[in-house]
Length: 115
Length: 113
Image (tube, rainbow over all chains, first blue to last red; front, top):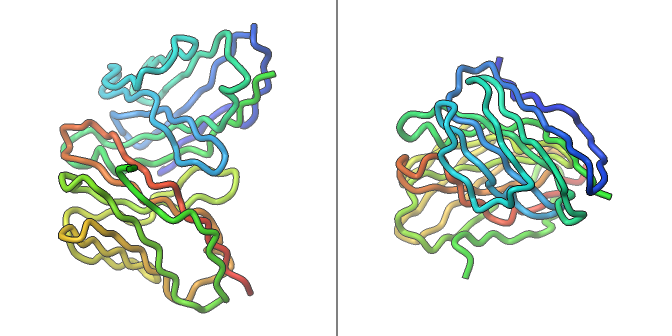
């Protein structure tokens, strides 16, 4: 199984809502990532978890809160978002040893619209 | 100056053409080089992964890395309409960076039947 799954596929939320994005992989990968991608732009790294511990936070606003409950699951909790946070949110995973960090496998993404 | 430069296109070619996609970079410490393909409204798919300089071939795809010129290329032979997508180059430093990839802007490719 070489798949990263993400739910939901689409999400529309108001600025006062709280919602969560979910990501799952069963490849035995111990590094998991959240990226944000705007239209016609490359993915921007938000967070990296390595062995279930947060290892990189790219100065992301606190209205985005990541969580890694176990080695297969990654969540992104959303609260009080702004319209400019509307984007495709991508999850990725990779092995976490040596250079293999770099072979990242992406999920299909959650398309988020903030009204 | 961006760390990684990639012509956004769009690039339009006839079916069967050889496609050349390129990225240049400024940081000579990059050691790992990747090409991703992204179809519209989908997540990026890892196509090619190379370490340091040299060539790597996989079917119709060939990746080249020239570290002396800070230049990487992806060649697609016998291009097909199904190759129409955005192609993103990505690179990273040593593994100690913990998986931080630096992406190019992406080149939008259209292969016409």
